[in-house]
Length: 126
Image (cartoon, rainbow, N blue to C red; front, side):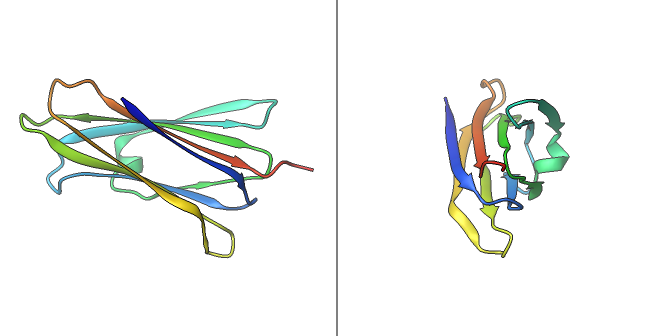
């Protein structure tokens, strides 16, 4: 089971910040796939565990793009642990945009990886 967060009409030059945090001693791996789509071209970037955990990883948001981040978390411990996937958008003036996103996943070694999808749609170009 996963989670979905969508922000619409995000102001140009805003910043999305993504963090994945768990127990201080680790016990999990995470990663993400970032897609940037301007309705003509799509680019893909793989984000490794050290890019987003503990984070925050800043993603600059430009007018006319849709940003989709597919986050995955796999726990590696024999006992269940909880890992938090957090994201927020900061407008160019430093104020928050919309509501911050937080999704906690709990699992242990051998469980299926857990996922969250985060989408930011910026204001249209032109």
